[in-house]
Image 1 (cartoon, rainbow, N blue to C red):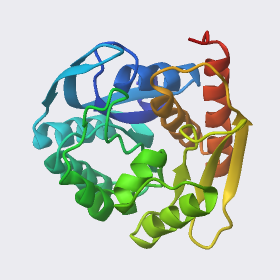
Image 2: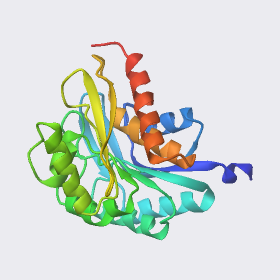
Image 3: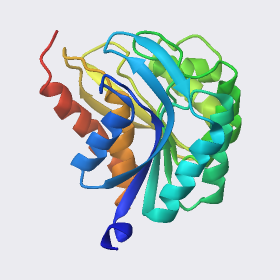
Image 4: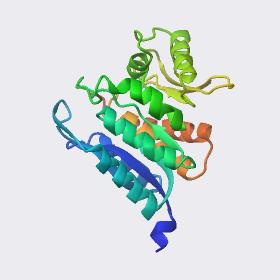
Amino acid sequence: MALRREPHVLVVGGSDSSGGGGIARDIETISSIGVRTCLAVTALTVQTHHAVMEIHSMQPGLVAGQMRAGLQANKVAAVKIGMLATVEIVIAVAGVLRENPQVPAVLDPVLASTSGRALLEAGAIAAMKRDLMPLCRLVTPNLFELALLVGSERAVDEDGVVWQGQELLTAGARALLIKGGHASGPQSTDILLRPDHEPVRFDTPRLAASMRGTGCMLASSIAAHLAKAQSIEYAVRQGKLFVLEKLRKTPAE
């Protein structure tokens, strides 16, 4: 089958019944870049654009089974990981990545919804840092997620952001794209950190418009470009431009 030979991104994450984020947003983004997707659903949620009412996590063996089936059925050239919900799912996903070290993985560490509902058990953060992050080609925390992962207060300036990022690199992360969307100022600056590299800044104008799912879009876009065998810097730059164009088309509230 020709389909099996086309590059795919294996999307690992939760459903969002509102369509604003999660695997619906991932599939939409990756498909628009011309890459196919296959899926491993980690959780089902009942939510609107304003609140998460219910979360039903999958059995970890089922998540791992979906991943292995997707990898067996298709030419998976990248993995995009979003909501993981429980420590057991974190460990299960890490186990499958360990079996497939040649496939680059992008981890968007989804810790809470926009409305503030926790989407990852508190005890799972340590497992994510220990077992999963070292297996991923790139991790994409925002400023709040970065602080939670480091176990510190949110950084108030760029020096603090870089220091917290270096702490995660020391803990085993291979590369970080720290998102600056929750900062202030006329520019939205993301910072790419890698061991033995100088930080790389990606600046785009800060727009008045806002929308849900931008973190999903950015990580999915990066994964799609990695699936096309592009460099990580190129993939990040294209991901930033993708999100910027989506925001430009979104009316300001």
